[in-house]
Image (tube, rainbow, N blue to C red; front, side, top):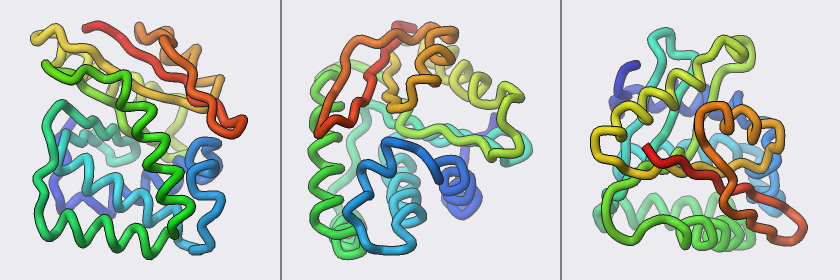
Length: 190
């Protein structure tokens, strides 16, 4: 594993855009947006947010990536303000409000103090799936966080992923249902 640098943004965004093309949660969040580049726009946003308030790891051949947000807070800067206003104008008010609502529901279950890591996004290029890259990226953070006894969190709307995450020690602790769209919240104590 290697920690991504800001210069890796296009590589990371490409992996995520290809990986999440048919993701039920992303499609739910963005369904009201009319921007034809909405998937790439949200992935660029996610990269910058995780880069500023967490850690991003790529596998050695740049075919898989994990974006972890930690208990670290993002600084309130002009760049932060610009990124958020730009996102609003590019994605639209309805999708932005839906994203904010889901984020609020998800983060309600994260600790308010202490350390934790939240798997904000993980993607593997379609042609590289099934090779264990996602598991290696997750286990890397599990190992890293085990030194601090911090909890790890993730969410999935894909029920197939629940079994995969169970095998790595994650368990569903809550289900969020918004307009018939279910998001399964999972955690693991390190």
